[in-house]
Image 1 (cartoon, helix red, strand yellow):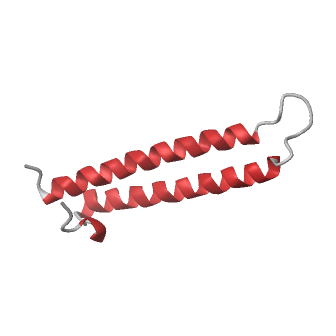
Image 2 (cartoon, one colour):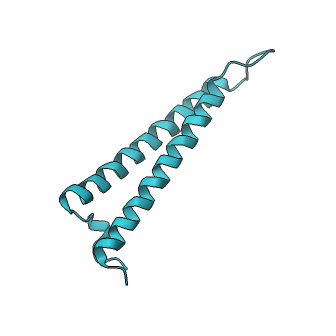
Image 3 (cartoon, helix red, strand yellow):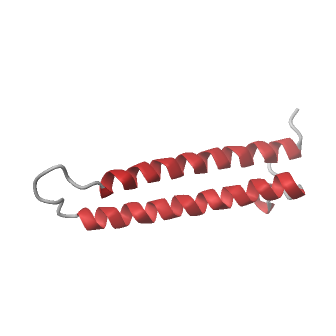
Length: 88
């Protein structure tokens, strides 16, 4: 049977992995929309697409930062985040 400590650690690791994946996807999307078009006129909403992709990438970085802080605090100090206390 999984202890509360093991449960919290598993959840935090899952959150971290999901945040890393989200950042990877946002980065790939930003790279794709910010590439110059091979030929022809630029995309009509190109600047807005880049702005949106940049905003998504920034949000993904914020999410990753949050996940890193949560798992680091847990692993170093044993601090279980409030939202995971008593959860099961």
